[in-house]
Length: 268
Image 1 (tube, helix red, strand yellow):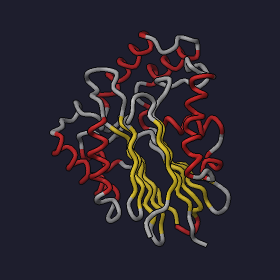
Image 2 (cartoon, rainbow, N blue to C red):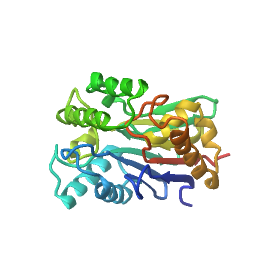
Image 3 (tube, rainbow, N blue to C red):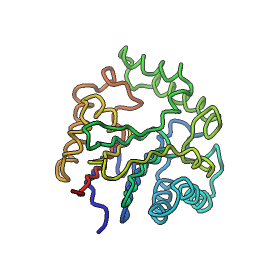
Image 4 (tube, rainbow, N blue to C red):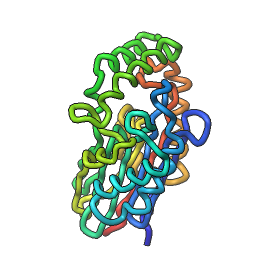
C-alpha cells in the first residue's frame, strides 16, 4: 500500500506558482521555489519541476542527505546551472518506514509532528533568519507602519536578496537547494520511532504563517481532503480582506503560494 496523505496547493498569483509536492510509496516531498525580486534571482518554476522528479525517483531508500545530493547533481546537470546565479528552493521531506518516521528540512518550510503523548515537534531550518537581520526587520517594520506593497517595499526586497546571495550555501550563512549539491549535507534531519507519531503536517511558509497565527497545527491534521483547499482559500481571503497591506502579518508579498500535506498514521 502506498503512503496515504491529504494535500492541497494554492498559488499566490498566476498558476501554477512555484510550490510543488509529490508522494511515493513511503515518502512526501514539498518544495517552495524562491520568488525573484531582481535579475540576480531567476524564477524557480522549471527548477522545482526537475528537482521534484529527481527526488521522487530516489527518496524512498538510502540516506536522505545522500539522496538529496544526487537529486541536486541531476538537476544542476539537466538545467546547466551555476552556483550563485541559479534558482533556489526549500526542501521538506517526510519518509515513513516500518520503525522510523524521518523528517527533513532545508530552508524555511516547516513540518509539525503530532506525537502519541499529545505533544508536537517542529522541524524547520531557520538559518536564513540570521542573515541580513537588519534588512529583514526593516521591511517588516515598514509593513507594520502601513507602507504596503509598493515600489519602496519591492526595493527593500531586492536589496535583501542581494545581501543574502553572498551567504547562500556558505558556512556562517544559510543553506538552500540551488546549484551546489554540497548543500544537501546541511539538511536538518529528525527521526521519530514510528509508534510515537500520530500525524505530520508539512507546509510551505505561505501556510505556516497562518497555522502559527491561529495555533492551528493540530486542527489542520484533522482536516480531510475536501476541506484542505478551503483552509488555504480562507487564509488567502484573510490576507485580502483583513490584512491587504501586511500590517498584522508582515510578509514579503500579499499572497504567497500555499501548500499543505497531511499524513496520519493508520497503525493501531
